[in-house]
Length: 311
Length: 324
Image (cartoon, rainbow over all chains, first blue to last red; front, side, top):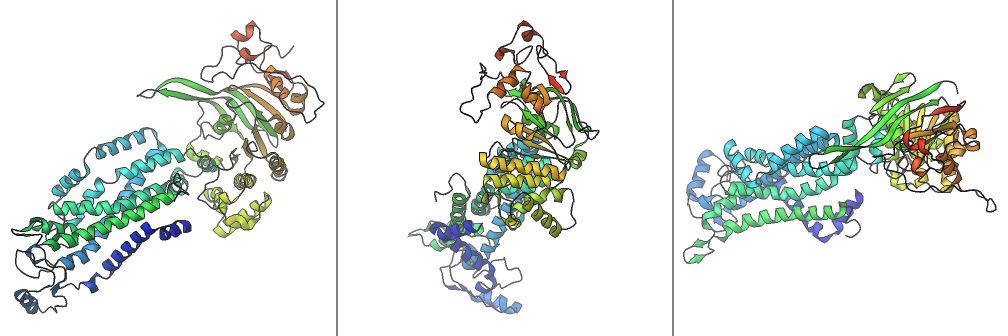
């Protein structure tokens, strides 16, 4: 494990990934300081104006909105759209800062739960074999036969709008890869003599899976999971962009991009006038996904026995 | 030497050969085909035969790591072939196995102390972790590894040391019988003798019974009290060690013995060279399974399968002509 950490930090690519992730973690942790919330619901992006058109970076909060906050007795500690505003005056900077929390939540929760389901299905299927394997793998095949994005979209539409629904949809169609991966490695590892030795000692099957098989098969899954955190965030963003994700005004990167949808080209005669509406959210998503992929790539190079020593 | 600790009666283990899309069973590998023998308390029984003759399958089936197809495995008067898995789990305390490959038989992600303590933990032999690890230390010292190495991982040890760890793991449960499945075959000759001597010492100390599987007759000659010879899933000869090496009856056993190298360059002996290969256990020859390769084969050998008969007291042989 030490060796793994050492390599993660000595490799330039993974070091960049780790630094990026670290920055994102800091942003997520200190979100209330970086962008102080104006209402109790801190995930609600504050509006800086009632204008439909996006406002350029540096735009100050409009007077009529400030008047509302004053009337409500809220101290306005945050009154400038540093990155400009999106459609409808939603503050981009605020949305991105608090959206980092959303991204971590979506990415980590969906991947962790998917991995757990995958481990459960895959290890039972691989270890016990027979009819159980047959049933579980056919179920996996059925889930795999749906195109991921379409399936997630349909399920979110059925369940209704909201980030939790998005996560349920992403988990429901995201566990199969892990199940297959785990099953494959367990099929190979369960033939090892040390597994037979554990059986000869009288160790229970579930314990054999937990103590011998999983520790020896989990690494490819961890690599896969790390890389998938980024793509889960992208998919969640895509769902938000398509309008079935987070509710309007919720701090979510996909939502920010979706706000930019009508303004990407700019105004007639002013191509790219509203560049900030798509650039800032885009760069956050790209860097976040890149960070996880860099770390995941290096993890794979370190943990894949076939590549071991060639790093 | 009077009480049978383990009785194997008509044990059969076939493996299905599956082919095609529907995994239809098209045939059976007859790994162990109707064998019976007894192991007495405190003795070492050597089980010999060439690769693929069913020695390991016999051991694994006795331990029910492979489910027997037919037959009985009577251990201390209890038929293990019939009992439930949960009951078998309790019985495992009494019967252990040492494996051939010291490299793959230890979990690479576990510390040595946890490898050895696993069985004790499973059978609740000690109340707390400290006592358990104390016992692990004693066991390690007993098999010749300093107790302070218990926090290391198995890849930090040499082949011989790893085999010692495997022995300690088996000993931890204080079993009555240990199957040594080619326990010394993968080791260097110099280490091999050390491990054999260790096994012998442990046998005296703990009053152990061994079923010692090997393909090397010189090892068998050194360690065992009785010898069982297998060929293609069948037992062809059982005898006391002295009797076996001085008065070998079965032609196959004779050929095996003639193949043992003698460390004397002037010694001239007759080497029996067997022709042909071992037939496939999926389709063994009719009659005596050895007849296609046997120099003494006659007509009857191809037709009638010889039974394992007691030729002399304690000396069994499965050949039509072994009484001659």
